[in-house]
Image (cartoon, rainbow, N blue to C red; front, side, top):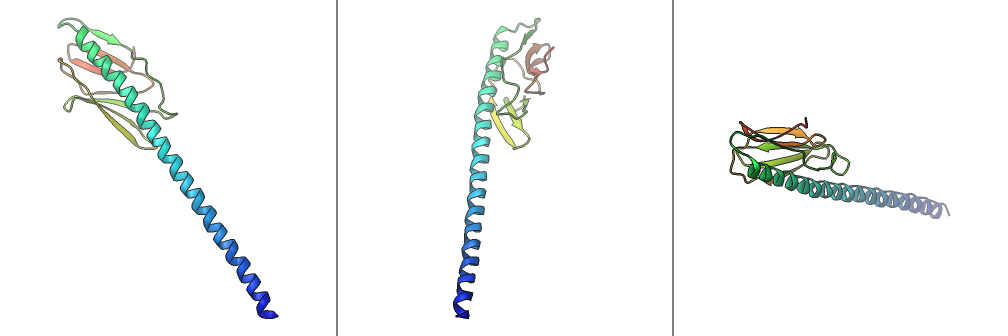
Length: 142
């Protein structure tokens, strides 16, 4: 009779252990899935924002004259899926680099212009496109 009582106790403890492992695995799996979906959503939105800013750079390039200046404030969201983001214009590689810090997501969008680009950067909350005697740049609103 004593062996039977031990068998029930061991079975009960093993069942609780297995259930705990299954629940822990499920929670970890769901957390990883949600994090991956959030990063993809941020990447998608940053791509759209980057394409908008790149098109505004192209438009400013078309409007620019040698002596004139062009100033445009593109309509872009202040945050990407609830995250602050940064926009950097990389003149040497002719691309916009949009990034968030946490989670770390980076998107690169090519920029094609006839006028020179200037290395510059700004936050997503304060985006303006400029053309002046130095070239095309992104920066803070006036």
